[in-house]
Length: 600
Image 1 (cartoon, rainbow, N blue to C red):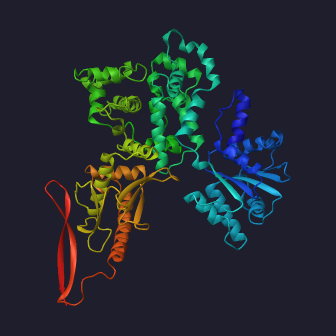
Image 2 (image 1 turned 60 degrees about the vertical axis):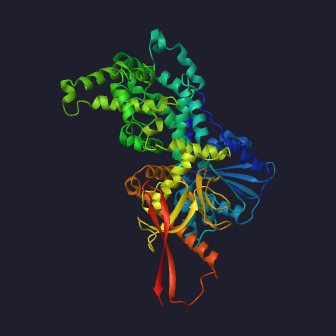
Image 3 (image 1 turned 135 degrees about the vertical axis):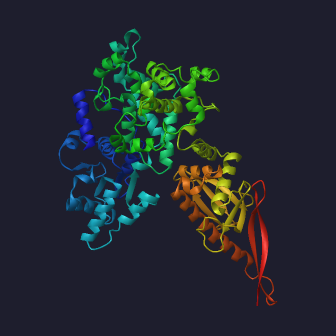
């Protein structure tokens, strides 16, 4: 039990715990005090704080701490209103059919209408659903709680009657990261560092240096904000990072070190600092590299979802010609020297250090060692760390070195701006809207169209999954007007933007598309000339499925609009008008109607 381990470790270390707010705890207490009949479920993934919330709730309603510390898996406490509060602090403590008893007590309260007990159950999403499925099989029925809980977890559906569901996996966000960073780096125990000899006589303690940078001393909190941007993009892409992982991230940022020979398990202790200072390797403790788990062995980093998520941004590997030109040639090129001094040399601890300048000179001068195979590896690794530092340290208004271009999500800044605009009830930027429209047109048609004012919904005459479609079934404005066209809306449940394309005024005539960061990146890259299949086949399939829905909706709209209004019957034959998409020399597409007559 992680919660019990931490409680024991606190007692041995004799330090104050890291205190984090529990916003859902007050709601849980209010629910119990309101005397609403039924029970309460605390759900989440490993590391979300389910047991922590259980223990805090036990304390808040007057439970005895000694009873909580006892070995029993089920704790009971009599409430003032006469109900018996039954705490099942972790369903994973029960193996196999052992879990039937606590689940049957939950059933009795929720499904059986028994108001004598209030069951408070903490469980992982998947584990609870599996146990309910197995229990249902033993009862020879489909368990009535399983489906509504599955819809609640996966689609944010309504909770079952008489069961209040508190899903901790939906509560982590940028604010959670900010709070974790402040709690770790601003803990009162750090005050003891003020008297440390490792900081005397101009020495730099890498642990203290990283802690101060995480707190925002010197950059006004820019590092924390940009770290929050990455965590937010990961969250909006559907990746959940529990509080335990955020604690691991912040701890690694402060204590991480890239050489296991000088710091055991690549994490510094105070005893390691004198050796690191003596050999002049403080640069290997860079907080900017630690943020991506670059100090850890690859297998160890990939075991943690948070480092796997941070690595997926490619910071350090992705770059631009201007950024690499600055880092490699900046100190010698008169055109770049001012930028080098302002952006690299300004940081003597993790920027233009003596070790970096030495490796840079060896690389540029082409000494014998640098010419050998692998001789420039050291400088290349340093170069990656410098790119990571630039992502966090570049000024916001730095047109020559855009920070998002140093990540795999080059248009993530625009994506976050879309969300902020929608939250503030402002119009989305014309440039961003136009790029989305151009990307949609290129995916829908397979043609290099430049149109940003309209969206072509095209087919190849029957096969909707065709990559190249030159028959325009419908076209609609890229901006919603009079109930027609594309609107960009904010989904309050997910916090993500949605593309809502209406083909005709009135309800039921629109199709929505969930615009995740990766899908926005896909559309933006395609709009700028990337081949769809070369970026992401998954995103391409998602967009083609959206196109198929639009084609079906266009067919329904057309049938509803022209029912009973066709040309007169008879004549020499039936006529069919096809709208072909042609392209002007400048790349703008337009429709050219062609009428085809079939003999009677």
